Length: 473
Image (cartoon, rainbow, N blue to C red; front, side):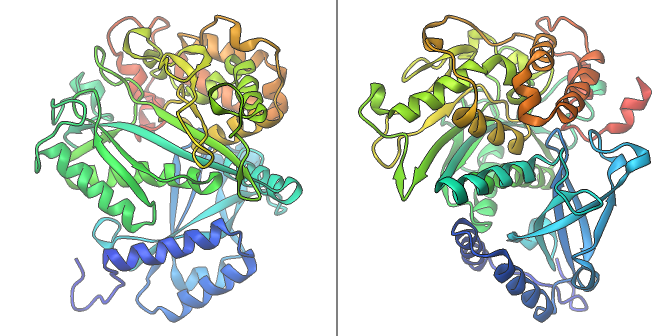
C-alpha cells in the first residue's frame, strides 16, 4: 500500500461506514446543497492526506465514466469543470463537444484504500450544457430533477431497492477476451445458497459485502444464486436517486474486487446458455408524510394508487422494454424455460410475470419489476419506471390481457421508436440517439439469437470495455 514517503489517506472500514452512512443520511434528508458543499470543501481543504477526487458520471447507456482531479486543482476550479462530450457515445456531436460537470456534493463517498487506492474520495457529477443548463442525455440529472420536483410539489418520496445478480468468471477481462476464448469458466458450481467457506465465490462475495458496507450501503444479505458461479449481494431500500448511484457503485465494486482476485464480475443478462440469467429486480414504493402510499385494502394488500402504478407500467411495457432490457444479450434472459419475467402481467406468486407483488405490510408494501436486466442504465430505469408508474398512460383491463415482452432486440427497438410516449418521456432527440446506439449493437450481431452465445453480443456489449473493436467491424 502506502510507502513511508507517501502519507495518503487510509481510513479503517468501520470509520468509513460511519462517514458514508452520515453522508447518506444528510442526502436522504435533503440537506441544502449549499450547506453540504461548504462542509465538503472545508473537509477537502483541511484534510492534507487527500491527493485526488474521482468525479463520476454516466453516459446514455449507463456506463460509468470517472475523472481524477488533483485536489488542489478541484478546490480552485470545481465550478468550471469541462470535458469533451463528443468522446462519449450517445452524447454530443464533435462540432458541439464542450460539456460541463457540476459536482453533486451530496453524493460524496469515502473509499476503501485497499481497492481504490489511498488518498482518494469519490463524488458524482451532473452533466451540463455549456450554458449551465442540465444536459438532456444525462439520465442521472433527469432522475434527480423528477424526484426533487415530486418531493417539492407533491410531498412524495420515491424509494427503491435493487437485487442485482452477476456471474464470477475465472481470469481477468473474460468478457473482453470472449471473442478469442469463446467461453466463460465458472469458479464455482455449488448453486443456490451453497458455497463452502473460503472457496473463490464465497471469498468474492464476502469481500464485496465488506467494501459496500464500508461505503454505506446498509447491507441485508448475500448469497450464491441459482446458476453456477452466480452471486447476489443485497442492500437496503433508500431514496431513488441514491439507489441509482448505488447500482453504479455496486457494479464498480464487484468488478474491482474480482479484478484483484484475477477474476471477472459479469453483468451480462445471459452470458451462458442452459442456466439462469442475471436480473436486476427493482423494488419500488412511494411515501408521503412517512406513509407508504402503496399499502391498502385492495387486492394483494395494495392501495388503488399501488395498482394504478402497476397498470401504467403494464400499459407501456412494450414501449419501455428497450430501456429495461438494453442489449442484444438481454433477450436471451427472457426465455420462459428459466423463470423469465416476460409476461406482461402482475402476480404475487408467478415469477414469469413482469411485475410481482411481494407479501408486505404497511412498512414494506412495494412493487417489484422483475424484467429489468442488470446492464440497463440505472438512472434511466428508475426515471422510466417512476414517471411511467405515476404519470404514464393507463389502459383499462391491461392486467387481464395475455401478452408477452419482445423476445428479440429488433422488435424492442421498433416498439421504442414507434412510441409517442417514449418521445414524450425522454424527448425525441434523446430517444432516437438511444435507439441508434442499440441499433448499432444489434447490427453487429446475427439477427437470430439461436441457442449459442454469439461473440458479437459480448464483443459489442455496451458494458464491455473494448471499444477499439468497434472500429474493426
